[in-house]
Length: 394
Image 1 (cartoon, rainbow, N blue to C red):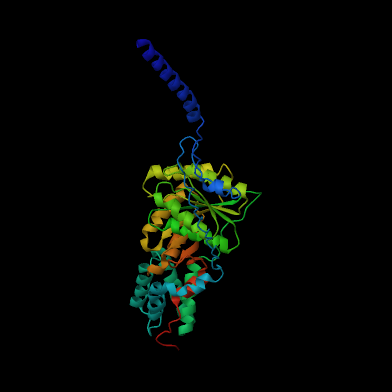
Image 2 (cartoon, rainbow, N blue to C red):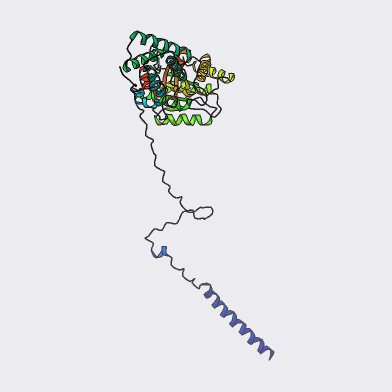
């Protein structure tokens, strides 16, 4: 019996092993399920671009937005008003001074009897107008003599007499031309000096316009390095008329900036280099010495052709002391008298020339960019006297 059970179990084992040998290969050869079709496989003829990505990280990177550059706006270059006849066009700006000369003096001279009291009033009017004591006495003495000799005094004659004496006091023989022409390939150098508050940098910009209006090419040197806004202000004036400005860092050596400006002027072949210096108080010895240094350094390129002293007409006789001290440091060749439109003391022109022997070459008659005019004695006196009729006419 036991032998029979062993045989049966052996047969079952063989059958089981045989069945497994048939089933396992079939399981190994079972096909994998097909992959799902993608859009690329479905339409292989269409190229699909993948978005740009970082190779190392796989992070998608958006392309930078396209920013259009703002349009370049060109600043139009201004054309300065011609200087010829400019003083005649600005004569109305001398209305305050006209009250002294035109109405005051001519009114006194037209009295029926020119006694001593009247002549004293005439002297007082001239002195009040800053003509100066010595010049006033000379003018009055000549007027007294000429009116006595002529005998008759019509309004026209009186005006002509006074005009002639004032023009004579202004010395029309003085050379009032600005020396701005280059020589031997070196530009003319114009040094602008003056005290604080006289409108020096503004006047320097206006002088550039005067030169350009007269046909010169100009380069500006911003040697006022102590006032932060001075170089910016000068550069603005220059840019309006197409003039280059040479400047240095704040608190730079003014002499160095002036030297570089002249060198740049030589390299660019301009006609005139206009150098603005720092405003200086005449009682500051160190600052005045520094102005002398600017002069010496600039002259390494060649002589300075013109040194213009900017004076404020409203300062009156104090302006003469300022002018005198500057002439001791630099060779002042001319005066630009500003703010004449704001004072009744137009006689300061006579005082400057009488005491210093320096001609007034330019006069400022307003705040406009072209309100700086070349000085002409006859036209100036004519503007001072105005056209007011006298009280009587013989």
